[in-house]
Image (cartoon, rainbow, N blue to C red; front, side):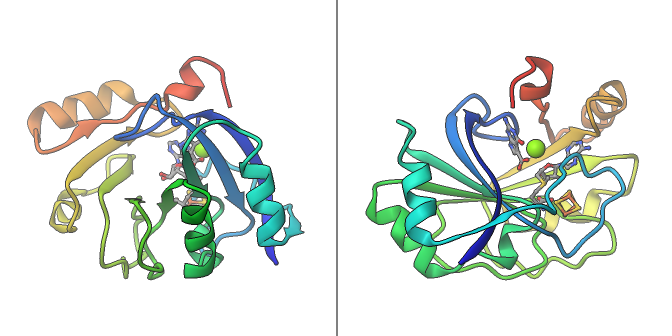
Length: 181
Ligand SMILES: C[S@@+](CC[C@H](N)C(=O)[O-])C[C@H]1O[C@@H](n2cnc3c(N)ncnc32)[C@H](O)[C@@H]1O
Ligand SMILES: Nc1nc2[nH]cc(C(=O)O)c2c(=O)[nH]1
Ligand code: SF4
Ligand SMILES: [Mg+2]
């Protein structure tokens, strides 16, 4: 059984796959306590993998995004394999502090200050920018590097930083801008 906070269908609002329809599976609980965290993830219900797969299959899209809370506390190869068997493209949003099972199709690592990254493989880095030194994150082994304003509040600051450090790209939380989940 795995503790699930919510399962919903929306558009990926952030990062490389922005705009893609996806089923979000939000796991309960996290090993970090980011002051800016925009998600109430502590509540949840225990669900079997069969129940999770049935909930995911209610929606027509191929992409599934495992998030939380911290999905790295919950996800294993059995769940990833089961999602692959029903034809899904499996993405994960993680803070990077835990190693992940192999085989996940797209890994988004969002490292946090004072929380060492143990993740070995990732596709994109997406940092919530609040003025911290982000230069070391460019050494993480990703193909894409995004900075994201915090709660859509400091977009001008993020744009100014990226114009000076063009290795980065802007990620907006587009779902918040268009008022969808
Ligand atoms: C709620 S977290 C869950 C996944 C994982 N715990 C993590 O932090 O990557 C999902 C994404 O939202 C970002 N995020 C959380 N709070 C935010 C905020 N106030 N503004 C912008 N992005 C935020 C995180 O950095 C992460 O990329
Ligand atoms: N639309 C939408 N896109 C998202 N991308 C990452 C999210 C997350 O909370 O992990 C998220 C979310 O909560 N909503
Ligand atoms: S690691 Fe992710 S879920 Fe956990 S508190 Fe930070 S932003 Fe929220
Ligand atoms: Mg979110």
